[in-house]
Image 1 (cartoon, rainbow, N blue to C red):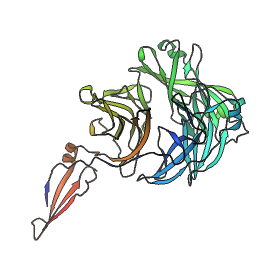
Image 2 (image 1 turned 135 degrees about the horizontal axis):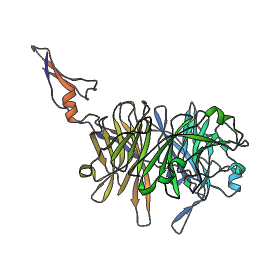
Image 3 (image 1 turned 180 degrees about the vertical axis):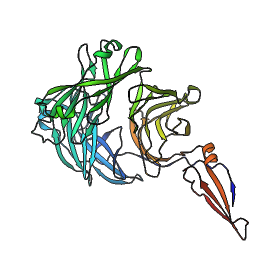
Image 4 (image 1 turned 120 degrees about the vertical axis):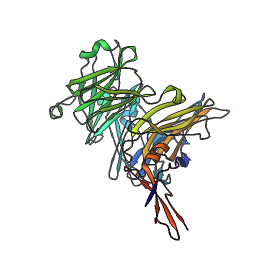
Length: 455
Protein backbone atom coordinates (compact mmCIF):
# COMPACT_ATOMS: atom_id res chain seq x y z
CA UNK A 1 0.00 0.00 0.00
CA UNK A 2 1.45 3.36 -1.06
CA UNK A 3 1.12 6.49 1.11
CA UNK A 4 1.71 10.00 -0.22
CA UNK A 5 1.50 13.08 2.00
CA UNK A 6 -0.08 16.18 0.38
CA UNK A 7 -1.80 19.33 1.72
CA UNK A 8 -5.60 19.66 1.53
CA UNK A 9 -7.78 22.55 0.46
CA UNK A 10 -9.43 24.79 3.06
CA UNK A 11 -13.23 24.65 3.34
CA UNK A 12 -14.01 28.01 4.95
CA UNK A 13 -17.21 29.58 3.68
CA UNK A 14 -20.44 31.33 4.61
CA UNK A 15 -23.14 28.67 4.09
CA UNK A 16 -26.17 30.93 4.51
CA UNK A 17 -26.97 34.41 5.84
CA UNK A 18 -30.24 36.04 6.82
CA UNK A 19 -31.50 39.38 8.11
CA UNK A 20 -33.67 39.45 11.19
CA UNK A 21 -37.10 40.95 10.52
CA UNK A 22 -40.09 41.47 12.84
CA UNK A 23 -43.55 40.30 11.76
CA UNK A 24 -45.93 42.75 13.40
CA UNK A 25 -43.66 45.01 15.46
CA UNK A 26 -41.45 47.86 14.19
CA UNK A 27 -38.00 49.20 15.13
CA UNK A 28 -36.85 45.99 16.84
CA UNK A 29 -33.98 45.94 19.33
CA UNK A 30 -32.27 42.56 19.30
CA UNK A 31 -30.29 41.12 22.20
CA UNK A 32 -26.59 40.75 21.52
CA UNK A 33 -26.73 37.05 22.48
CA UNK A 34 -27.86 33.84 20.82
CA UNK A 35 -29.59 31.47 23.24
CA UNK A 36 -29.39 27.71 22.71
CA UNK A 37 -32.27 25.24 23.05
CA UNK A 38 -31.48 21.67 21.99
CA UNK A 39 -30.35 21.91 18.34
CA UNK A 40 -32.05 25.26 17.85
CA UNK A 41 -31.39 28.89 18.71
CA UNK A 42 -33.45 31.65 20.30
CA UNK A 43 -33.19 35.31 19.27
CA UNK A 44 -34.71 37.58 21.92
CA UNK A 45 -35.86 41.04 20.88
CA UNK A 46 -38.11 43.96 21.68
CA UNK A 47 -40.42 45.60 19.21
CA UNK A 48 -42.71 48.61 19.24
CA UNK A 49 -46.34 47.93 18.45
CA UNK A 50 -47.55 49.93 15.47
CA UNK A 51 -50.46 51.48 17.35
CA UNK A 52 -48.36 53.35 19.90
CA UNK A 53 -45.09 54.05 18.10
CA UNK A 54 -44.10 57.64 17.37
CA UNK A 55 -40.93 59.35 16.21
CA UNK A 56 -40.33 62.63 18.04
CA UNK A 57 -37.19 64.65 17.27
CA UNK A 58 -35.58 61.58 15.74
CA UNK A 59 -36.32 59.37 18.77
CA UNK A 60 -38.65 56.40 18.76
CA UNK A 61 -41.24 56.32 21.55
CA UNK A 62 -44.08 53.96 22.34
CA UNK A 63 -44.82 50.64 23.98
CA UNK A 64 -42.11 47.97 23.64
CA UNK A 65 -42.79 44.29 24.19
CA UNK A 66 -40.47 41.29 24.44
CA UNK A 67 -40.65 38.68 21.66
CA UNK A 68 -38.89 35.49 20.58
CA UNK A 69 -37.66 34.11 17.28
CA UNK A 70 -36.66 30.43 17.29
CA UNK A 71 -34.64 29.05 14.38
CA UNK A 72 -33.33 25.58 13.62
CA UNK A 73 -29.68 24.80 12.95
CA UNK A 74 -30.14 25.75 9.28
CA UNK A 75 -31.63 29.16 10.02
CA UNK A 76 -35.24 28.18 9.28
CA UNK A 77 -37.90 29.79 11.47
CA UNK A 78 -39.58 27.41 13.94
CA UNK A 79 -41.74 30.14 15.47
CA UNK A 80 -41.75 33.91 15.82
CA UNK A 81 -44.03 35.04 18.61
CA UNK A 82 -44.89 38.74 18.68
CA UNK A 83 -47.66 39.24 21.20
CA UNK A 84 -48.47 41.97 23.69
CA UNK A 85 -46.68 40.90 26.88
CA UNK A 86 -47.34 43.29 29.79
CA UNK A 87 -44.85 44.80 32.15
CA UNK A 88 -45.21 44.01 35.83
CA UNK A 89 -47.98 46.37 36.88
CA UNK A 90 -46.61 47.23 40.32
CA UNK A 91 -43.28 48.32 38.85
CA UNK A 92 -44.87 50.20 35.99
CA UNK A 93 -47.12 52.08 38.42
CA UNK A 94 -44.00 53.03 40.39
CA UNK A 95 -42.56 54.70 37.30
CA UNK A 96 -40.14 51.97 36.25
CA UNK A 97 -39.58 51.22 32.59
CA UNK A 98 -38.47 48.00 30.95
CA UNK A 99 -34.93 47.57 29.64
CA UNK A 100 -34.36 45.40 26.60
CA UNK A 101 -31.16 43.74 27.79
CA UNK A 102 -31.29 40.13 28.88
CA UNK A 103 -29.16 39.62 31.96
CA UNK A 104 -29.45 35.86 32.40
CA UNK A 105 -30.95 32.89 30.54
CA UNK A 106 -31.85 29.38 31.62
CA UNK A 107 -33.18 26.55 29.46
CA UNK A 108 -34.94 23.70 31.22
CA UNK A 109 -37.15 21.25 29.33
CA UNK A 110 -40.03 23.14 27.76
CA UNK A 111 -39.32 26.38 29.66
CA UNK A 112 -37.17 29.30 28.53
CA UNK A 113 -36.37 31.59 31.45
CA UNK A 114 -35.05 35.14 30.91
CA UNK A 115 -34.12 37.77 33.49
CA UNK A 116 -35.38 40.99 31.85
CA UNK A 117 -34.75 43.85 34.27
CA UNK A 118 -36.96 46.88 34.69
CA UNK A 119 -35.24 50.16 35.38
CA UNK A 120 -35.35 53.54 37.03
CA UNK A 121 -32.41 55.57 35.78
CA UNK A 122 -29.35 53.33 36.07
CA UNK A 123 -30.97 51.01 38.60
CA UNK A 124 -32.16 47.58 37.53
CA UNK A 125 -34.39 45.01 39.20
CA UNK A 126 -34.64 41.38 38.03
CA UNK A 127 -37.87 40.10 36.50
CA UNK A 128 -38.19 36.51 35.36
CA UNK A 129 -40.11 35.94 32.16
CA UNK A 130 -40.92 32.30 31.50
CA UNK A 131 -41.69 31.37 27.87
CA UNK A 132 -42.76 28.10 26.29
CA UNK A 133 -40.02 26.43 24.28
CA UNK A 134 -42.72 24.91 22.07
CA UNK A 135 -44.34 28.06 20.66
CA UNK A 136 -42.73 31.01 22.47
CA UNK A 137 -45.88 31.92 24.40
CA UNK A 138 -45.62 33.58 27.81
CA UNK A 139 -46.08 31.19 30.76
CA UNK A 140 -45.58 33.56 33.71
CA UNK A 141 -43.74 36.63 35.03
CA UNK A 142 -42.08 36.78 38.43
CA UNK A 143 -40.85 40.19 39.66
CA UNK A 144 -39.06 41.70 42.61
CA UNK A 145 -41.80 44.08 43.64
CA UNK A 146 -41.21 47.74 44.46
CA UNK A 147 -40.52 47.14 48.15
CA UNK A 148 -37.67 44.76 47.37
CA UNK A 149 -35.90 46.70 44.68
CA UNK A 150 -32.10 46.86 44.87
CA UNK A 151 -29.42 48.78 43.04
CA UNK A 152 -27.42 47.13 40.29
CA UNK A 153 -26.95 47.47 36.55
CA UNK A 154 -28.37 45.13 33.96
CA UNK A 155 -25.29 45.58 31.79
CA UNK A 156 -23.46 43.32 34.24
CA UNK A 157 -24.53 39.79 33.39
CA UNK A 158 -25.67 37.33 36.04
CA UNK A 159 -25.70 33.57 36.50
CA UNK A 160 -28.42 31.03 37.15
CA UNK A 161 -27.19 28.17 39.34
CA UNK A 162 -29.85 25.60 40.18
CA UNK A 163 -32.81 27.63 41.53
CA UNK A 164 -30.90 30.85 42.24
CA UNK A 165 -29.59 33.84 40.34
CA UNK A 166 -26.32 35.53 41.30
CA UNK A 167 -26.05 39.21 40.30
CA UNK A 168 -23.06 41.54 40.72
CA UNK A 169 -24.47 44.52 42.61
CA UNK A 170 -23.15 48.08 43.02
CA UNK A 171 -20.54 48.00 40.23
CA UNK A 172 -19.48 51.60 41.00
CA UNK A 173 -17.60 51.52 44.31
CA UNK A 174 -16.91 54.53 46.53
CA UNK A 175 -14.39 54.65 49.40
CA UNK A 176 -15.34 52.13 52.07
CA UNK A 177 -18.16 50.73 49.94
CA UNK A 178 -17.55 47.03 49.29
CA UNK A 179 -18.98 45.31 46.27
CA UNK A 180 -21.49 42.51 46.66
CA UNK A 181 -23.15 39.62 44.90
CA UNK A 182 -26.93 39.65 45.28
CA UNK A 183 -28.70 36.29 45.36
CA UNK A 184 -32.31 35.82 44.23
CA UNK A 185 -34.70 32.89 44.17
CA UNK A 186 -36.10 32.09 40.73
CA UNK A 187 -38.87 29.84 42.06
CA UNK A 188 -40.86 32.54 43.87
CA UNK A 189 -44.09 33.92 42.48
CA UNK A 190 -44.97 37.55 41.82
CA UNK A 191 -46.28 38.15 45.35
CA UNK A 192 -43.27 36.68 47.19
CA UNK A 193 -39.99 38.26 48.15
CA UNK A 194 -37.41 36.77 45.80
CA UNK A 195 -34.35 38.63 47.16
CA UNK A 196 -32.46 36.30 49.52
CA UNK A 197 -29.09 37.64 50.70
CA UNK A 198 -25.91 39.48 49.75
CA UNK A 199 -22.37 38.13 49.49
CA UNK A 200 -20.02 40.91 50.63
CA UNK A 201 -16.73 41.27 48.69
CA UNK A 202 -13.91 42.66 50.86
CA UNK A 203 -11.40 44.88 49.03
CA UNK A 204 -9.14 45.86 51.95
CA UNK A 205 -6.16 43.73 50.93
CA UNK A 206 -5.72 45.43 47.55
CA UNK A 207 -7.38 48.82 48.26
CA UNK A 208 -4.13 50.70 47.54
CA UNK A 209 -4.20 49.31 43.97
CA UNK A 210 -7.55 50.89 43.05
CA UNK A 211 -8.65 54.48 42.63
CA UNK A 212 -10.75 56.20 45.28
CA UNK A 213 -13.68 55.53 42.99
CA UNK A 214 -13.45 52.23 41.13
CA UNK A 215 -15.66 49.68 39.43
CA UNK A 216 -16.38 45.99 39.79
CA UNK A 217 -16.66 45.28 36.08
CA UNK A 218 -17.55 41.62 35.80
CA UNK A 219 -17.65 38.32 37.63
CA UNK A 220 -17.68 34.58 37.09
CA UNK A 221 -19.29 31.96 39.33
CA UNK A 222 -16.99 28.92 39.36
CA UNK A 223 -19.66 27.06 41.33
CA UNK A 224 -22.19 28.09 43.97
CA UNK A 225 -19.54 29.18 46.51
CA UNK A 226 -16.41 30.26 44.56
CA UNK A 227 -16.44 33.57 42.67
CA UNK A 228 -14.01 35.44 40.40
CA UNK A 229 -14.50 39.24 40.33
CA UNK A 230 -12.78 41.70 37.99
CA UNK A 231 -12.00 45.21 39.29
CA UNK A 232 -10.64 48.23 37.47
CA UNK A 233 -7.34 49.25 39.12
CA UNK A 234 -4.98 52.22 38.97
CA UNK A 235 -3.11 53.05 35.76
CA UNK A 236 -5.59 50.98 33.71
CA UNK A 237 -4.50 47.77 35.41
CA UNK A 238 -6.84 44.85 35.98
CA UNK A 239 -7.37 43.10 39.30
CA UNK A 240 -8.84 39.60 39.28
CA UNK A 241 -9.90 38.35 42.72
CA UNK A 242 -11.09 34.94 43.85
CA UNK A 243 -13.59 34.86 46.71
CA UNK A 244 -15.16 31.93 48.55
CA UNK A 245 -18.13 31.78 50.91
CA UNK A 246 -19.99 29.09 52.83
CA UNK A 247 -23.14 28.27 50.89
CA UNK A 248 -24.92 26.39 53.69
CA UNK A 249 -24.40 29.31 56.10
CA UNK A 250 -25.70 31.81 53.55
CA UNK A 251 -28.87 29.79 52.93
CA UNK A 252 -29.75 30.14 56.62
CA UNK A 253 -29.46 33.93 56.66
CA UNK A 254 -32.56 36.07 57.18
CA UNK A 255 -33.86 37.95 54.15
CA UNK A 256 -31.58 40.88 53.28
CA UNK A 257 -28.63 39.79 55.43
CA UNK A 258 -25.02 39.82 54.21
CA UNK A 259 -22.39 37.10 54.49
CA UNK A 260 -18.78 38.18 53.94
CA UNK A 261 -16.84 36.17 51.39
CA UNK A 262 -13.22 35.20 52.10
CA UNK A 263 -10.57 36.52 49.72
CA UNK A 264 -8.62 33.51 48.40
CA UNK A 265 -6.17 35.28 46.04
CA UNK A 266 -5.83 38.32 43.81
CA UNK A 267 -3.73 39.05 40.75
CA UNK A 268 -2.84 42.46 39.30
CA UNK A 269 -1.65 42.95 35.74
CA UNK A 270 -2.20 45.08 32.65
CA UNK A 271 -3.57 46.07 30.23
CA UNK A 272 -6.93 46.81 31.78
CA UNK A 273 -9.19 46.02 28.85
CA UNK A 274 -10.37 42.40 28.78
CA UNK A 275 -12.94 40.35 26.89
CA UNK A 276 -13.93 37.18 28.73
CA UNK A 277 -13.01 35.12 31.76
CA UNK A 278 -13.25 31.37 31.16
CA UNK A 279 -12.96 28.58 33.71
CA UNK A 280 -10.84 25.68 32.50
CA UNK A 281 -11.52 22.08 33.53
CA UNK A 282 -8.10 21.88 35.20
CA UNK A 283 -8.98 24.71 37.57
CA UNK A 284 -7.09 27.39 35.64
CA UNK A 285 -8.58 30.59 34.24
CA UNK A 286 -8.24 31.97 30.72
CA UNK A 287 -8.83 35.60 29.93
CA UNK A 288 -8.32 37.61 26.74
CA UNK A 289 -6.86 41.08 27.34
CA UNK A 290 -6.68 44.20 25.27
CA UNK A 291 -7.28 43.17 21.70
CA UNK A 292 -4.38 40.81 21.21
CA UNK A 293 -3.17 38.98 24.37
CA UNK A 294 -4.18 35.75 26.08
CA UNK A 295 -3.48 35.24 29.81
CA UNK A 296 -3.78 32.01 31.77
CA UNK A 297 -3.96 32.04 35.57
CA UNK A 298 -3.36 29.03 37.79
CA UNK A 299 -5.48 27.82 40.70
CA UNK A 300 -3.61 30.18 43.07
CA UNK A 301 -3.83 33.21 40.79
CA UNK A 302 -0.31 32.88 39.41
CA UNK A 303 0.28 33.91 35.79
CA UNK A 304 1.13 30.76 33.82
CA UNK A 305 1.58 32.60 30.55
CA UNK A 306 0.83 36.00 29.02
CA UNK A 307 1.13 35.76 25.26
CA UNK A 308 0.37 38.12 22.39
CA UNK A 309 -1.49 35.89 19.95
CA UNK A 310 -2.55 38.53 17.40
CA UNK A 311 0.53 40.59 16.60
CA UNK A 312 -0.07 44.16 15.49
CA UNK A 313 1.73 43.76 12.19
CA UNK A 314 -0.49 40.97 10.87
CA UNK A 315 -3.76 41.62 12.71
CA UNK A 316 -3.75 45.41 13.10
CA UNK A 317 -7.10 45.72 11.27
CA UNK A 318 -8.92 43.29 13.58
CA UNK A 319 -10.87 44.29 16.68
CA UNK A 320 -11.80 41.29 18.83
CA UNK A 321 -14.83 41.67 21.09
CA UNK A 322 -15.09 38.17 22.57
CA UNK A 323 -13.92 34.56 22.33
CA UNK A 324 -14.85 31.04 23.40
CA UNK A 325 -13.39 27.51 23.42
CA UNK A 326 -14.99 25.12 20.93
CA UNK A 327 -16.53 22.08 22.58
CA UNK A 328 -16.84 19.92 19.44
CA UNK A 329 -13.31 20.74 18.28
CA UNK A 330 -11.37 20.42 21.51
CA UNK A 331 -8.27 22.58 21.61
CA UNK A 332 -9.60 25.17 19.16
CA UNK A 333 -10.90 28.65 20.01
CA UNK A 334 -13.12 31.08 18.12
CA UNK A 335 -12.48 34.85 18.36
CA UNK A 336 -14.88 37.33 16.83
CA UNK A 337 -15.52 41.01 16.24
CA UNK A 338 -14.83 43.01 13.10
CA UNK A 339 -12.22 43.75 10.46
CA UNK A 340 -11.47 47.20 9.01
CA UNK A 341 -10.95 47.35 5.27
CA UNK A 342 -11.16 50.55 3.17
CA UNK A 343 -12.69 52.34 6.18
CA UNK A 344 -15.51 49.80 6.34
CA UNK A 345 -16.12 47.29 9.13
CA UNK A 346 -16.65 43.70 7.99
CA UNK A 347 -17.67 40.69 10.03
CA UNK A 348 -14.63 38.74 11.27
CA UNK A 349 -13.93 35.38 12.94
CA UNK A 350 -10.50 33.96 13.77
CA UNK A 351 -9.84 30.33 14.75
CA UNK A 352 -6.78 29.35 16.80
CA UNK A 353 -5.47 25.99 17.97
CA UNK A 354 -4.34 25.14 21.52
CA UNK A 355 -0.91 26.66 20.81
CA UNK A 356 -2.70 29.96 20.02
CA UNK A 357 -1.64 29.85 16.40
CA UNK A 358 -4.24 31.20 13.96
CA UNK A 359 -5.43 28.44 11.61
CA UNK A 360 -8.25 30.33 9.90
CA UNK A 361 -9.45 33.92 9.39
CA UNK A 362 -12.90 34.71 8.01
CA UNK A 363 -14.10 38.15 6.88
CA UNK A 364 -17.18 39.09 4.92
CA UNK A 365 -19.40 42.10 4.33
CA UNK A 366 -23.18 42.24 4.53
CA UNK A 367 -24.81 45.27 2.87
CA UNK A 368 -23.96 47.64 5.71
CA UNK A 369 -20.90 49.82 6.25
CA UNK A 370 -20.34 48.95 9.90
CA UNK A 371 -20.63 45.23 10.64
CA UNK A 372 -19.77 43.51 13.91
CA UNK A 373 -20.40 40.01 15.28
CA UNK A 374 -21.91 39.98 18.77
CA UNK A 375 -22.22 36.24 19.56
CA UNK A 376 -21.37 32.77 18.26
CA UNK A 377 -22.66 29.25 18.97
CA UNK A 378 -21.05 26.03 17.74
CA UNK A 379 -22.91 23.20 16.02
CA UNK A 380 -21.99 19.55 16.51
CA UNK A 381 -20.45 19.42 13.04
CA UNK A 382 -18.08 22.26 13.95
CA UNK A 383 -19.88 24.95 11.95
CA UNK A 384 -20.59 28.25 13.71
CA UNK A 385 -23.90 30.10 14.00
CA UNK A 386 -23.15 33.82 14.29
CA UNK A 387 -25.25 36.81 15.31
CA UNK A 388 -24.25 40.33 14.35
CA UNK A 389 -25.28 43.88 13.60
CA UNK A 390 -25.01 45.76 10.33
CA UNK A 391 -25.29 49.55 10.24
CA UNK A 392 -27.53 50.97 7.52
CA UNK A 393 -27.62 54.65 6.63
CA UNK A 394 -30.50 56.31 4.85
CA UNK A 395 -31.29 59.92 4.07
CA UNK A 396 -33.37 60.07 7.26
CA UNK A 397 -31.29 58.23 9.85
CA UNK A 398 -28.77 55.50 10.59
CA UNK A 399 -29.94 52.26 12.19
CA UNK A 400 -28.70 48.74 12.90
CA UNK A 401 -30.15 45.62 11.33
CA UNK A 402 -29.46 42.31 13.04
CA UNK A 403 -28.13 39.44 11.03
CA UNK A 404 -27.48 35.72 11.54
CA UNK A 405 -25.53 33.24 9.47
CA UNK A 406 -23.74 29.89 9.45
CA UNK A 407 -20.06 29.66 8.61
CA UNK A 408 -17.86 26.62 8.11
CA UNK A 409 -14.33 27.29 9.36
CA UNK A 410 -11.21 25.42 8.33
CA UNK A 411 -10.06 24.11 11.70
CA UNK A 412 -6.74 22.84 10.41
CA UNK A 413 -4.31 25.05 8.51
CA UNK A 414 -2.88 23.83 5.22
CA UNK A 415 0.44 23.10 6.93
CA UNK A 416 -1.23 21.10 9.71
CA UNK A 417 -3.28 19.17 7.17
CA UNK A 418 -0.12 18.31 5.27
CA UNK A 419 1.34 16.95 8.48
CA UNK A 420 -1.77 15.09 9.53
CA UNK A 421 -3.45 13.76 6.38
CA UNK A 422 -2.13 11.14 3.98
CA UNK A 423 -3.14 9.75 0.60
CA UNK A 424 -3.84 6.02 0.45
CA UNK A 425 -3.67 4.54 -3.06
CA UNK A 426 -5.21 1.11 -3.48
CA UNK A 427 -5.02 -1.57 -4.74
CA UNK A 428 -1.24 -1.70 -4.99
CA UNK A 429 -0.23 -2.97 -7.46
CA UNK A 430 -3.13 -1.49 -9.47
CA UNK A 431 -5.51 -3.47 -11.69
CA UNK A 432 -8.37 -1.97 -13.73
CA UNK A 433 -8.80 0.97 -11.34
CA UNK A 434 -7.26 2.67 -8.34
CA UNK A 435 -8.90 4.42 -5.40
CA UNK A 436 -7.23 7.46 -3.85
CA UNK A 437 -8.40 8.06 -0.28
CA UNK A 438 -7.42 10.90 2.05
CA UNK A 439 -6.66 9.30 5.42
CA UNK A 440 -6.50 11.31 8.67
CA UNK A 441 -3.75 10.78 11.20
CA UNK A 442 -3.30 11.99 14.79
CA UNK A 443 -7.07 12.12 15.32
CA UNK A 444 -7.88 14.63 12.57
CA UNK A 445 -11.08 14.23 10.58
CA UNK A 446 -10.75 13.74 6.80
CA UNK A 447 -11.72 16.59 4.51
CA UNK A 448 -14.91 16.49 2.46
CA UNK A 449 -14.70 14.74 -0.91
CA UNK A 450 -11.69 12.75 0.32
CA UNK A 451 -12.07 9.68 -1.97
CA UNK A 452 -11.43 9.54 -5.74
CA UNK A 453 -11.86 6.50 -8.06
CA UNK A 454 -9.76 6.36 -11.24
CA UNK A 455 -10.60 3.69 -13.88
